[in-house]
Amino acid sequence: MEDDKTIFSMIIDGEIPCHKVYEDDLVIAFLDINPFSTGHTLVVPKEASRTLDKLSDESSGALGRVLPRISRAILSATGAEEFNIIQNNGPNAFQSVFHVHFHIIPKLKDGRGLTFPFRSSPINHEEAEKLAESIRELLD
Ligand code: AMP
Image 1 (tube, rainbow, N blue to C red):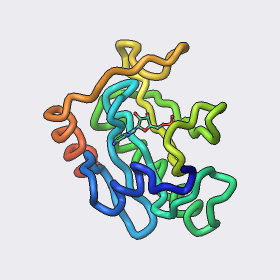
Image 2: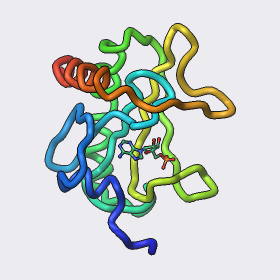
Image 3: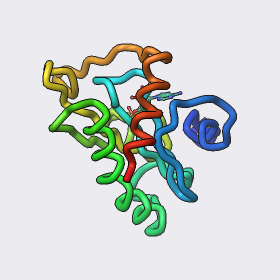
Image 4: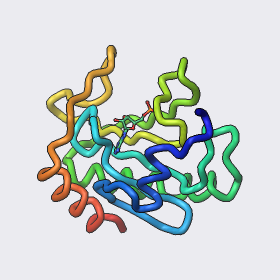
């Protein structure tokens, strides 16, 4: 059912774990479980909106305020100097989790990052926890 609680709402409610890099009253950010590159992070409003066009101004503003800051910390933690932000809305536009989110994807010097066709590989949880901690510490 479309209105079932999404996996991101379960993360926000603390029902399932994540490698958290940032949280405030309106936004949470955590490492993607199937990253395109090391440091691939999802920035998610706590408001359970399916697509960006349905999101409140308050949550939109909160996302906009933290995206550059979280991007900076990810670049510092990974050594990347370039990155993509992608945001998918609807199943035909590659959305698979129906709770608004922005992907921050470092473009690493070895070429890993967003490529066409999309290629990802499963996260290494031990490395991920260290990386998430490093991004948290680098947030200014
Ligand atoms: P999208 O295709 O834009 O909807 O992206 C959804 C993203 O959520 C994918 O990149 C998944 O790898 C990621 N994802 C799904 N479940 C989890 C999870 N439990 N923790 C972290 N990332 C997840």
